Length: 126
Image (cartoon, rainbow, N blue to C red; front, side, top):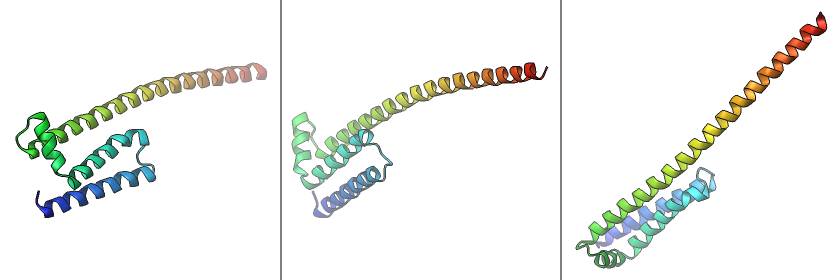
């Protein structure tokens, strides 16, 4: 790998890792949701520092060109991230549905109590 390209990839991976860590510090990410991003940034940094790992991994799985292996791994990481985000959205959707139901029940109870208070106020004035 060309030295300029390797330096670019190292710089990109460091910036990416810094952004992810910064988001963790300022609480834009939850740790359990940011683990995939931390793993991705770490793998990018390791591959940028040791590009021969990509060549070794490509040979291990039978891919001729290391760049094709990197694209394959990038696609797999994208699938992992999409799967993780889908699970998070599904979980949050269930929570929102449950909270909406609980809020509707509470509103109904408040209306019933208000009606009872209004009725008892009418009975007291009679």
